[in-house]
Length: 383
Image (cartoon, rainbow, N blue to C red):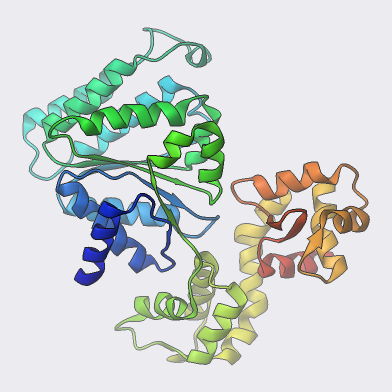
């Protein structure tokens, strides 16, 4: 582990861009802790964690926050949503969240807690009494926002991390990516200030950011999260069972990997359901086959039914085209013919571009369902 951390730190210091696949949760966390060690030395790096739905971005941020706090760092996670639609709302959310999460730091003196509590109550980067709807129309007090972040740093005298989850929401605020880059570049250049900005978003975030601000993309080190490998699927299943006496047979874990394609959420669902329904200390392929329909129904209720219900009638025709074709990959022309939907490209863009896309754009003009298990769900509701 120490060897890996030394390699990561050396890479981060000497390489302009890090786009490393970190498929396993434990490896991901160790790598982030390597960047945390860099932060503690005063060498500042900013990260963008990229990956598809359910790949583990938010869980990784939460675990990293917990580990950072145990290393005497302040940290906050902000899940951006549609209400974060203006500079003022963004800046106020960041400051309030950081002050709130830093207040209970162990060992913090009373005066530090009082400062943070007062800041979280008084922060305001727009005109007094401005309405929510008018916040989009007014320029924020960027100078005060910078000064507040500097004051937090000086008061805490420890490194702090600001983590923005669902970072694609920043693109809804014109110029937000560029201004955040400018603000944090200025703050991080000041003496004695140790802060890290971490974005977390879908795998296309860098491409989307590049169209808005090329300099902002270069400001972040990109970390791509991919699905588990076979070995990492084994580890994700077996590690939580340590000390329980329960064993998954290798053949069963192989089958889980094949069915889930290493997708962390689906691996977790299969392991949880098979563990819950166990009748002995060994879980076998036979157990998996016996419970497969029940696990698929579980996924249907917990996930597929919800996202499918939000689709339009034409979008459902497009999804069902894959069931009709019995093919994994279809061109937009084939989809139009099978579904009978006109202006099919508009619907394809919607289905492949949402935060939880139901279609994957494999290459130009060619699409697949986002996962084979979703295809099984579609077959079942059609029959």
